[in-house]
Length: 227
Image (cartoon, rainbow, N blue to C red; front, side):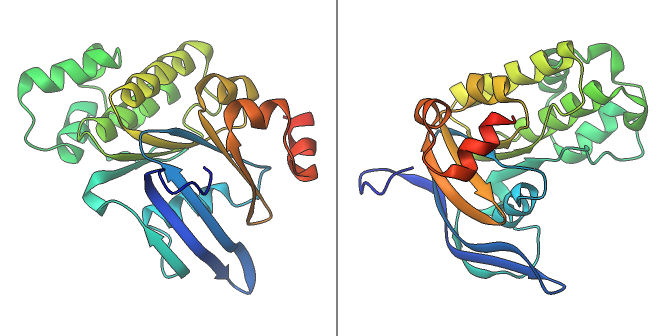
């Protein structure tokens, strides 16, 4: 998160700007995310978190500025509302992760405690089950970089705990994760680094301990007081 030359950034952005319908959504964003880190992107609703994630992932269309990142095939993103096909959970998984051996498929469903839900239509699963299905669908390809947009928003404690466990395990296995959250306790549990975005601008970058103990920017201090 610093400017030290010996830090390996898996993804970086320089002067990244997004304007839609005359409104500036991202304003000359500069950032670098450490390879292997779990970086939390924090900010108020409407600050630009989702736009930034989607822009970095390359799904937000044409933008100004530059992004240096792993190939698209080495990246995955899980949205706040999972994108699920009109088919069973198993067939959805097969579509997003084709070619896996039966034993590997079974292992991923077991990993998410979804073994009994394989033959249920994906869109009829509970919110927590849908998010777990989306997450294992992303993780099964062993991405180098994983974007998570509010992956536990509005989920119950059990589902949240299960998803946090899978996120932590993926991180320990070497996946770099960039994640948004409105849950301060969750952010403090999981984050190593923090990016704070406000009105489309990155105002502060810091390690997690420093940010939550003593943020420098007044907007960051105000945000934490209400988080």
